Amino acid sequence: GAVVSQHPSRVICKSGTSVKIECRSLDFQATTMFWYRQFPKQSLMLMATSNEGSKATYEQGVEKDKFLINHASLTLSTLTVTSAHPEDSSFYICSASRDDYEQYFGPGTRLTVT
Amino acid sequence: DQQVKQNSPSLSVQEGRISILNCDYTNSMFDYFLWYKKYPAEGPTFLISISSIKDKNEDGRFTVFLNKSAKHLSLHIVPSQPGDSAVYFCAATPSSSGSRLTFGEGTQLTVNP
Image 1 (cartoon, rainbow over the protein chains, first blue to last red):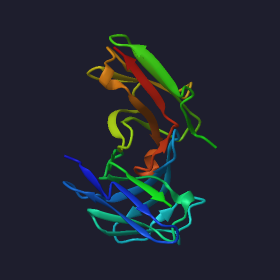
Image 2: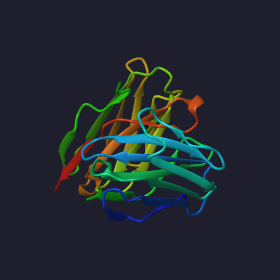
Image 3: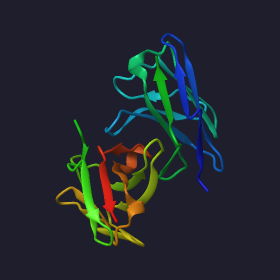
């Protein structure tokens, strides 16, 4: 149990366009979902925390108007990178949590902005 | 301010020997600690955790030790296997924050056959 999927696994887009990444908990209801980004050889940096039906809580330095998060149900959260630029190229990972401390991670999405 | 630090970016061990990965933290509010394993281009997978009321937790080949006074934890893998080669992240959370985790930078473990 506790499987989390992400779609797409990789995406290439042109500068100025928007990209949506989906995160789904397949076999459990996630009270909380988290979005991270990881640069090469660096740690996972938490971007935002979202609870179903409420606004996401963004970490300091993360632009909420650029990284739109929608947590429409207990099994789905989406991250939209708006007006993407090359510096947004990164590995984006979501995770989902039930009512305990463990987070179950998705496989990640590699975003490349050209 | 890096509240969770893994000072060794890489570690190389021989198959069959013990791997010891270290992690230090500064926030005294952290009371639950987790280790995750990550392969390239994949999400992290949970390995083992420990609550601050314990100083040791064991699961098969994996043992996590916690030294609260030193704010230090370590992950022991014995015997190490080539399939253990991956990046290992330690993470910490204070109970009051729910499941919000703070991650270390990760340590690349390479187990040589």
